Image 1 (cartoon, rainbow, N blue to C red):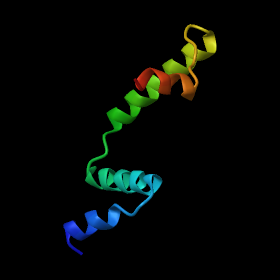
Image 2: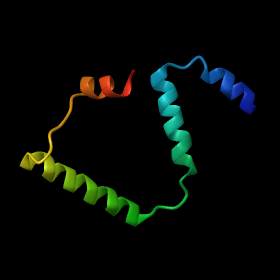
Image 3: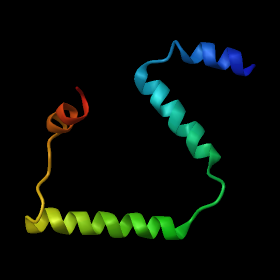
Amino acid sequence: MTLKEVMESARALTVREKAFMAHCLISSLETKHDEDVDNAWKELADRRCDELLSGKISGMSWEEIKKQIRP
């Protein structure tokens, strides 16, 4: 199958299927695992969780987030 054929076939996919396909394609580009990146994400997630639990920051609903990013 040529790239053109793949692109044409992708047009028929649902939004969810396209998102999954994009994820798979991007994931296939990652050839080297970086432990430092994993650790940095874990530290950030732990810090944000602590901030939420302590009340230092408050969460937002998905509806609130969509209102902020859409004009």
